[in-house]
Amino acid sequence: MAAGGYASASVTAVAGRAGVAAGSVYTHFPSKADLFAEVFRDANERELAIVNEIAARTGESVPERLAEAVEAWARRALASPTLAWALMAEPVDPEIETARVEAKRRYRDVFARLLDEGVSRGEINAVDVRTAAAAIVGAMQESLVGPMAEPAAGAGLIPALVAFVLHAVSAQEPARRRRRQRS
Image (cartoon, rainbow, N blue to C red; front, side):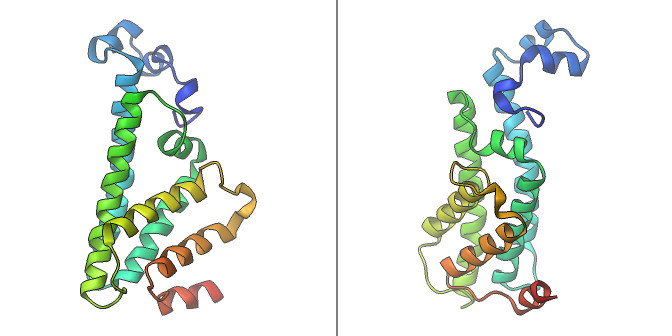
């Protein structure tokens, strides 16, 4: 999937890379969709762990952690665009789409917890945190790999995305981030 996306991946290719016969793969997974739904869950679990770790930090403001989580997700997506496309936007079988929606909900929940903390600490204006978190997930995916993504945006894409997310929840960009961007 990382090399050519879901459409180009085959059970035979996976079996070959694993050094087993395709029949062996089918012993554990009844179909390509079942196999790749598991691959999809595993890949998303690694990405979600990074965002979760940033969100759970103590000693940093919510806007700082929010900005860093968005930036980390964006950098990783842009570093592996084919995999990001496969995980976020490529047309896939219904079983995989179900896993994709589950992953989006889990990201939404991480951002919702972070926003809820920000509201309770007075660092973010009162918002419907679940709606705002869902909008953040959608905006990130759409701007990075969706049909409206601007691949030519280059180095300005990540700061623009972070600024958009912070402004969307009425959070000031952390001073430390502003200083880094100027230097």
